[in-house]
Figure 1 (tube, rainbow, N blue to C red):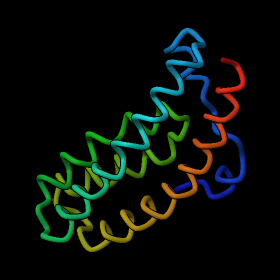
Figure 2 (tube, rainbow, N blue to C red):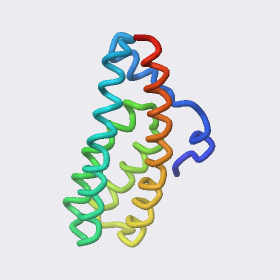
Figure 3 (spheres, rainbow, N blue to C red):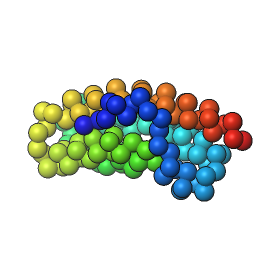
Figure 4 (tube, rainbow, N blue to C red):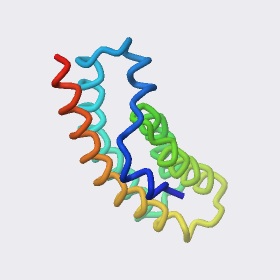
Length: 125
């Protein structure tokens, strides 16, 4: 389940900071890349779910998992993992569209959090 309480907290960018050697430039680049790629990945995932292509659904969800860890949202990563495993194992397929809808709604909150984090990082340049 996505942690709705966490949606009101600042992002935990410690993993990204550690990975980048605390480089604001690199962290901003990763945030920008996340915001560019995520809509494409989500669209691909939605299309796979809509046509009930469970193999592709699992593959799309798998590809997205690590990106949520980079921005400190392991709860969203776990959501993607749930979608991946259930699509791959052909279990609870009727619940996958709902899980996807939750992630999709959450991502809009995440984009705003990333914009806020990016603004703070820009101050360090």
